[in-house]
Length: 124
Image (cartoon, rainbow, N blue to C red; front, side, top):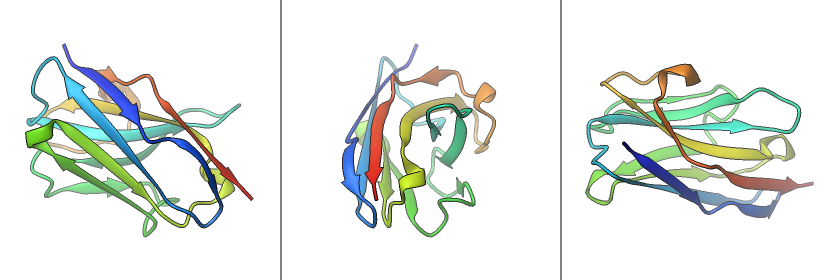
């Protein structure tokens, strides 16, 4: 079993930055893909970014490319999401997720473990 706990969310003005963290416990996730998803009120959960276990491969949603950066520290069992140039449409609950295997994927059903989520609100 893997437990994921996100932190770092909050209220930020448009154009600002926030860094989310997600710490994994229960077992090492060094051989897992780690990803971030988000869900806004009234919308379906959507893929944001993912990173392979070696950090060689990363994948981003088109809507966040050039603004968000995903990274991980396997020694700390932690994945990060640096979010810059935030927009009001980035407002959502952000979830950390983990999937076994080497390939980054955008389908949430392929991820086995999920955190409880952290709210990010971007004011205009």
